[in-house]
Length: 212
Image 1 (cartoon, one colour):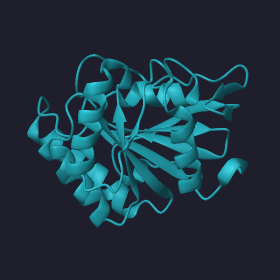
Image 2 (cartoon, rainbow, N blue to C red):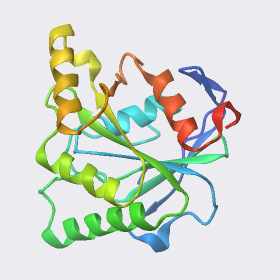
Image 3 (cartoon, rainbow, N blue to C red):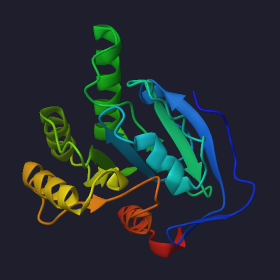
């Protein structure tokens, strides 16, 4: 469980000002969701795709979302309240097998129920490592998200790990595998690349524009 770390001063991230960011709760099922009715944007992807690092970068606070080199450490649905206006939600990694079958099924059920039933969920950011493109488990997950009626934004992560040739190849592969009309947004948590565009997408998904 992440510690309740708060910002001490406003932080400018990609043109968006984060005045506060705090861990609120971790849920293992729908009963554990926050009581406060605020818009939510969730983040999902395979283990070690850079999900936690990206969320920390977006909120301008290292260590708020716990980052681990051990795949599968996130096993609960973690809620972080930003600017007292909305939640960014860290979902357990997709397709990680080194947990018990019962725990894996519990995690999968929690994710499915949350995506299908949470009325405050406004959209989902699905991360794909630019170096590897989408795996079958990623494609299946995105198809299920779309089938549930949840808007999903495919985002390529770890832009800083590839050169221009590898970048073009990776973007083309992700575009084709996920049936996108154009290349996906590509980000780097380390270099803070693409965070401005991602914040724009998040705000638009919540229908709040720059007023969030």
